[in-house]
Amino acid sequence: MPPSLKRTLVVMPAFNEEDSVRKVVLEVLEKLPGISCLVVDDGSSDSTAVEALAAGALVARLPFNLGVGGAMRVGFRYAIEHGFDNVVQVDADGQHNPASVRALLIRLESADLVLGSRFAGEGDYIVRGPRRWAMIVLSRFLSRMAGTRLTDTTSGFRISGPRAVRLFAEHYPAEYLGDTIESLVIAVRARCIIAQVPVSMRVRAGGRPSHHPLKAAAYLGRAILALLFALMRPPVHLHSEPDGS
Amino acid sequence: MSVATYILGVLSALVTLGVVIEMLRRRRLRERHAIWWLVAGSLALIIGVFPGALGWAANLLGVTVPLNLVFFVSVAVLFLVCLQHSAELTDLETKTRTLAETSALQEMRITDLEKRLVEQSHGGPDS
Image 1 (cartoon, rainbow over the protein chains, first blue to last red):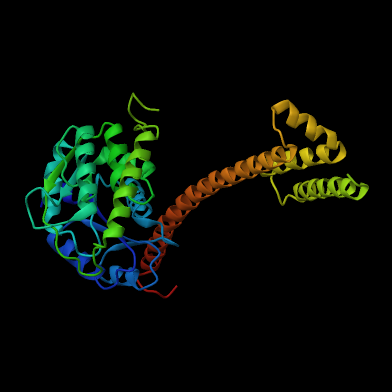
Image 2: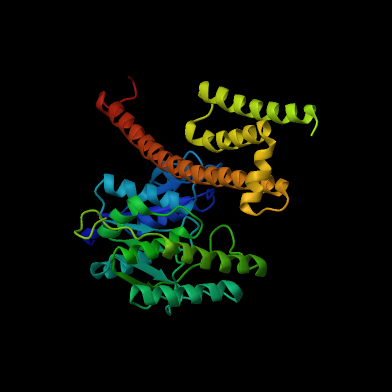
């Protein structure tokens, strides 16, 4: 077992995921022995928290729904309070394969933030229409910004190293798409090193992706807006660094 | 302009100002939220008492129909109040979010501490 697995926290934002959360937690704990798993119950009205506890996860319960960004910041803050070095985000719907966490962790040795990319070769994840265009535009742009090739910038499957954890515990955005796009912009501007690792995605255990053209078009618009706003905001810095605010 | 209209104008301005000041006095309204209402009320009172002031101001600004100046200033005040409210709302949401996160983390700690307390009192839930 790599020692870093012990210092890594899996954060799983979960909103009404009672059908899948137990299975996903059990799989995480089985495939990644020694790792800690924190399920952040994002104001669920079902028994998500009970299922997660039964599976052996730590559970933080938000009093109301904050969205993925809010749930993740709970995870980052918990990691800081309890001395975890790394935080890896895994979706509670079973879309992310816990086995890929090892690959992310290895890549993290020379980076601050590693994205699990669904389009970098492995797996057969396919998206079409405006949603796809949005992803391409975002990827092109953010790749340039980050100075490395990123093919899947809206991926929720990502691991943050110590510097990124400290940054995100304070500045993780709560807005729609903020958890993926704006967080990347924040990280790049705080001089975090971004990298990506190909991962294969699985069909969700519960829920389904939206492929309605209108919804996809709205997604494209909101994604571009989110990116523009993220770029307009003043950059934040890590406090402990000389270039701090 | 008839006397009745004149009185109506002055009275409505006085009522507006009175309500705002009374709410301020009872701490139902904070100063920074009341400022635009006070400005609007005072302007209405000035115009109400000296109707000629409206024509003078419109002339000064080159507004042909004085009433349009009233509409413009009213919309401007409402716009500023709305904008201020949106900003305050954003601020409150940010604070609520932070509180919710803190509450979730503290609940975890409490549960953990309770569990340890039970374990400490010789390993049984007999306390």
